[in-house]
Image (cartoon, rainbow, N blue to C red):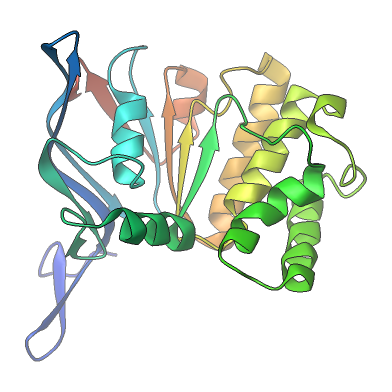
Length: 241
């Protein structure tokens, strides 16, 4: 329950802690296309509470993917700021942004983005190895995660030997590898059939509950959005009321 004082609670003298794990404040993004400005996002305000499951819904081209990239530190806004646990990420160096992504954010993409020459176990291990975790520790956690997403019997299979749904399960396990506080999923069921789509959404909802993840799923699908606790509509680069 939110404290009576509203969005902020005072935990000690002169110390204020936000209820929100991730915020966008007045965020805009403009690209230069052929020498002409193309504004993809404008004046976006979004707040994600700890442990919340939110669907970001909008048509293709509405700016959903761009907003997820900004929230996850893959790109920087042209205006406004991204705030993580009360701290602005506006002036991050590329190295600091990489650390932020590696330690706090897990990404799930529509196209899976698994490395084709690595098997499922090796793909899941990658985020931990990038953070210089010991090989044995990384493999142990990867095995646990693959078992948790129902792929204990497919660990040594290459992506080409897995179905689309299985590849997305590997991608979800990979996103959880470094125990992130936030999962950003961009159209995670966009390449799947209806039955497999339902399985992946059920899996994300289960993992959200079990790990108290802050989960933001970008989707144009009403069925996917209905699984979330809250739906935010994005239209023409702006949050719609």
